Amino acid sequence: MTRVSGTPAAGESTVATQTGMRARPRLACILCGTPGDVLHTGLIDRLSASPSPGVWSIRRCVDPRCGLLWLDPAPLEQELYKAYESYYTHAGRGPNKGVIARMMGAIKRGYLANRFGYREGVGPLARIAGGVPWLYPGRPPELDLSVMWLHALHKGTLLDVGAGSGWLVEHMNSLGWDARGLDFDPVAVRNARAGGLNFHQGSVFDQGFPEATFDAVTLCHSIEHVPDPVALARECLRIVRPGGQLVMATPNTDSLGHRIFGEYWLHLDSPRHLHLFNRKSMASMITMAGASQFRIFSTCRDANGVFVASRAIRRHGRFDVNASRSALDKLAGRAAQAAEILALVANPWWGEDLVAIVDKPGGPGS
Ligand SMILES: [Zn+2]
Image 1 (spheres, rainbow, N blue to C red):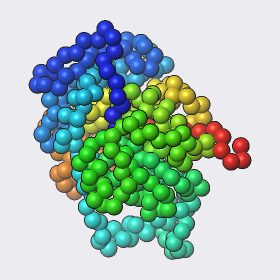
Image 2 (image 1 turned 45 degrees about the vertical axis):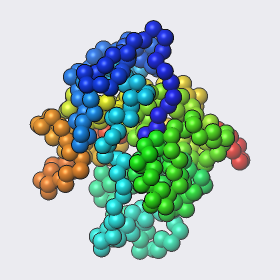
Image 3 (image 1 turned 60 degrees about the vertical axis):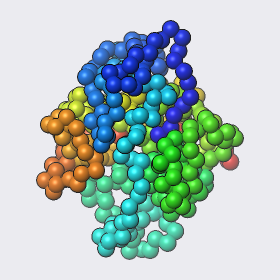
């Protein structure tokens, strides 16, 4: 994730959230200015090995045309680092070289060749094997996210904002992209560079990228972490070339998981998730960022993981993301995901993930 620079607005006071993370109350929606109702309260950090300080609420914009959720109070920018000191996505990457992994790799390459045109070095057998993921509808969205829905036709330079461990940068490079990552966390950046990846440190605003620098910019579960998502999306669109794409994936507050688990839903992730979207608030946010050509959809990706984690939070008050899951948990997770897949037939907006693909107008041939 990435920080956006800023200071408390005039007239806003700051409060200390019990154990030292300074924050300011936030009562109105940043998108439409409507006041928010308290939806969940008494939330603490439930995911870090050593939880960050503070007790938090989630407010919901009462305008049904918007419905944005946000963290209240909002941590001050200069305090945000405290929420990431033992955050799980910023650890280094481990090797994965077993026989099963190689076989899964071939299936994945076949799938990506068939669906997104990444055909280089993919033989006919792998192309046939690439049909396997369709046998279980939970798999395709996982593989789609592994390329952030970017077709090989768009191949070129890519910036992954909030790149964390760098898995996406590494994967896109392996498919022929010239990808680099950006993260504010110096530990994440150091780990990624040690793994040979091109990484920038800081916020996207600090980098001074010229307009139209990248063929694609990706925000994979990053936009929910920033104080000003509209400003971030606008800046990302500025540095995408005409004809290029900005692709975002983020938790979906209309999801079945949020409906079932409520305050225990994994993706509330206080105090790291500052804004949480549904399709309407996402569309407003993108429009305010200056884009008009986009599509938004929800997917069941990681509904299994969300179910297992949310259930653990409901039972134990926290979830250890680094603990290995039992076979029973894995099975229960997949069963929950299968249920969500069926539910999506009734309502396509119940998926755990919300995806937005924004096209920047212009470019060759237009
Ligand atoms: Zn609103």
